[in-house]
Length: 315
Image (cartoon, rainbow, N blue to C red; front, top):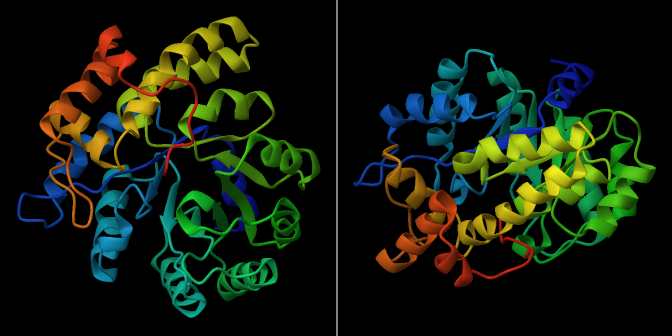
């Protein structure tokens, strides 16, 4: 798939779910849980899937497990929605090798590569890192800019410089609305800008973003779709009304380290997504009860216990 073909596919995907990885109680991937989970997502307005990202607990997945996961999900999806593979690490050579492997594997519209964590590269180091990945294969690349997780932040002008590369097609942006507005105003026409923060989807879409790469869509895809549809229909009052009720749910889904809350909700709904792998741990029974009350039941008292206002979830 060429970069332009990927852009055309992904431009239709306003809600891309950063999918969790289901585990069995013994910690192995629960491949049997995937069909029901994927069909649930697709039936609730997920228009694209990101595999082996942060929400999938990718730091604890082995290389072989990621490839097995890719194969299993592709077999279920059968081309119905575009797929994105997490390919980035803080090692440029490793990221290049994996991008090449995913390109040869096939079936992906793009690879998502995170700004390198821990090493704290300069802006020029970030530029050279992503250029090397994009030069390595014909797999189109989406940059993941999330300083809350990687410590360093890619500046908007560095992103715009990379946006000129023919094989870098977009960004999952988790910095600020100011940065996003600047990017949208100055980017090439065919460069995709996604927010990676559920709580800011309303604002991002209203300033011209292409969509949201979401965690909340696991459990609240219907209302997210309704909100984005209202924005598209220029019914801002309706969209804002949905957003006001949506904010406490997003905050609940990130009130303890993700993906513990969304896994608690999915397990409650019967999807058997199981536990987390260390160093992440499951919600306590008290946390789980409160999160479920907010996310699924809109419980007012439980909502009052949740941080109010849009906070930046630590995706």
